[in-house]
Image (tube, rainbow, N blue to C red; front, side, top):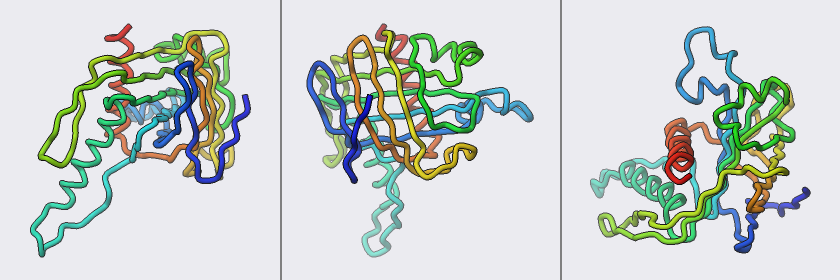
Length: 235
């Protein structure tokens, strides 16, 4: 699978429902125990390297804008930026028409660049699967068909999704390929950008992306909780 991404383009998504532009893409990387907050002294190397990749047709900033309060107005600009950021993240997962692709990629090698076999059991069983494969992962996507809109403070909108399609990749041929841009293979996640493409079966959801490195573990934890909730509540 070869995808050509134009300079400045974040990528595209394609499925049986049509095509859409990627407007937000983030990736998180590190030892699994560190990312999950379960690291104990001396055991970090007992967990593989993990990449969590989010690809969305919505804006998906890593963190709130870095702003300062304006004494002249007395407004809490930082709090407003935080509220706006939270609304953006919520919208990416809940507004009507929202599409999010989630890739969880695992390897024992600190060279993250390469091809990953996407399997139905990788979310729970990646440690066992890595015993016989260099790179494995899980893939899933969600699409919000209908959502109720609420208005908060007259400025920001929040959404409650009421009809969602969700599919965890389980078909033969599901795969992802990624390239850490600007990073030698022996340096973990040294580049700021991740270029990749994916194909998730049986639905045929596919696409290509350029993702921004994100070190916001609060957002990572929230996304991981969303993945688990979707897997167990919608299937």
